[in-house]
Length: 402
Image (cartoon, rainbow, N blue to C red; front, side, top):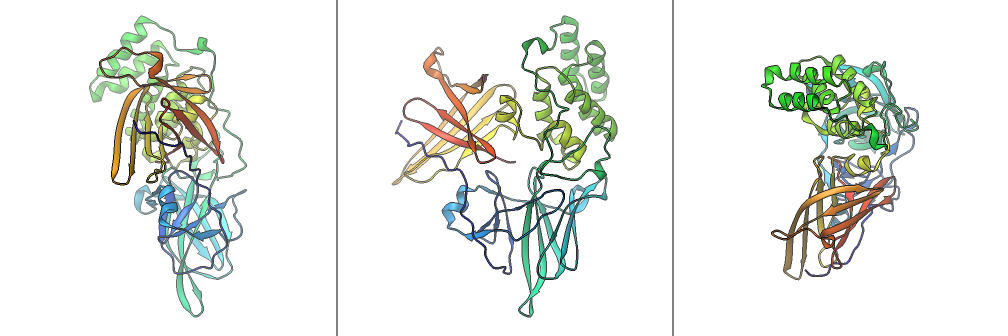
């Protein structure tokens, strides 16, 4: 395989103040914090501290290559019954609030601008609800223009007894202490044949009998992580949100080593999609706190990582790890009309703070040469993953925010 230099793009953009214009929102970066205005203006979201933001965003016009490296993702327009944010304006003050249960709940940020705000055009949220953008109108030089402002909401604070509609965002919030971070192997689930039999039966149960089947598992093993996860999902499907949150609370308080795996799974399972904007849910599954274990560092954003490629410089890499310890990697590179598209499939495991990939050659016995080490590196406020696949390919991937 052709040698490819290891070049890491850590998306940091030198930003300078830019005047406002008639703007359209282009989306949020999937690998970093900036957002796109129009087709070529990259801006930093304003940080939120104690429910307030101040100042103007720093923006810079950039080339298409920089925009491509930011992996801009389409935002979620906040309309209809699935909206989790709403915005209102009074004079020069903009207020963004959460929506919980169809009702306007707590204020997440207030911000004041220099020109009076006319009306709110649109509200957008990132895939994780950690950033929100507002398009609004204002009058400047005698005409109405549209401006865009975005905020980085930070972590949300909540406790088991909180009303989801009364909890606000705060970037100074400490990581949740509800979710355990077990490291002792003795915390693993007991290997009881009766429990294993009940789990097997629950996995095969017809839809109408699944809740009873998983409750039978909990009757035999009250702390069984998968059973708590499945019961919470089924309770939510039956419109019993309070019961589902309570069951997730039990999972979050568990000392089982695999509890965190199911909490991370809940972050992205479509069964829990209706709760992603609810602070109590986000707190229990750890969506807004810093990863506390190597597993969370690898899987906390859904197990999807990417390196944006540049022609004749570095390959495009997509790495996907799943809870069942399967890893898939796609490496694409192109230079002077010659390209490669290389798929890899194997397994992953944790070895301390390292991620060890095993990528066997089809039809051959696995050896030490089939193992590839990956180390976590700092990339601003988040992690990057540096992997070496033999002597001719290494890459640094950043988490993909879905």
